Image: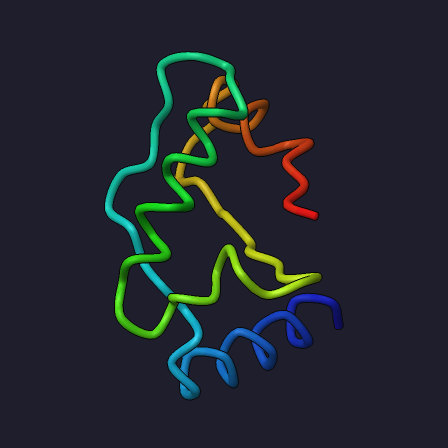
Length: 80
């Protein structure tokens, strides 16, 4: 049931152009500053300009393999 709900939500977001695929996302150090640099770069992509500007904005990052540095860098990142 949860998988079907997730599929439905992701499908709707994909149809609305709200899904962004990145080939590789790996951070060498566990620093939130590095995660912010990545988000700022992604906000320059057309259609994702509000990624850092909107209050209560959210992004879901799914990694293809376990990457502790990247996970910890994004874990407690709060914009506002």
